[in-house]
Image (tube, rainbow, N blue to C red):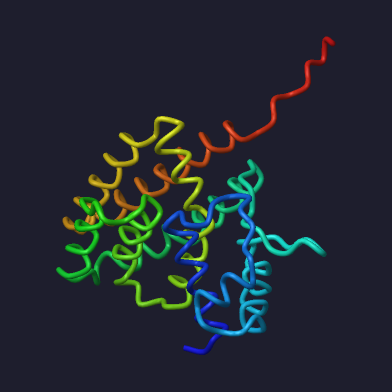
Amino acid sequence: MNAVELAHQHVLAALLNGDLRPGQWIRQDDLAAELGISKVPVREALQRLTAEGLVTFETNRGSAVRSLTAADAEEIYALRLAIEPMLLERSIANLSIVDLASAGLALTSTGSSIGEANWHFHRALYAGAHWDRAVTLVGRLHAAVAPYVVLYTQELGGSSASDKQHRKLLKLCQAAKTQRAVDLLRQHLEEASAALVASLRPPAADSTS
């Protein structure tokens, strides 16, 4: 792994585990010192993350984690809905005992953040697809969606429903009930998306005023 990839993966992990939060500035000097590399690869990694829509860049100020918005939530979940059901459908027949055990472990892990656990669960269920490019792309989406997952589960009351859907999804995958699993995954993503967009959308102006 070269220095650019090291910095890129480090920031992705920090987004997933919540060490970097929406709106937080990412200081190039601090990141370079932490990783023991120069600022040049850090700057290149941040440019890549900007192109991927994970951070923003402001001239004379630097890079910051994107703030939460209804538009971003809608886009991220639309992309997840376009890719993840397809991955799951392709994956289920090829899931190994290890894949299913990894998904189950992610549901009971207490040492991971919400964003990390959510990604580990979904990634395990997509392992049987053997589509590395798609899984890598979905991994980027999960880095972007991590703070939205925290908002949905902790502040919007979605924790119980999300947990039940995850557990039911795992059982359906274990039973190789592909269509029911895909349908449930779509429902899972659609419900979270709708709640988040509604919560983050600015209130409509009062037309009577």
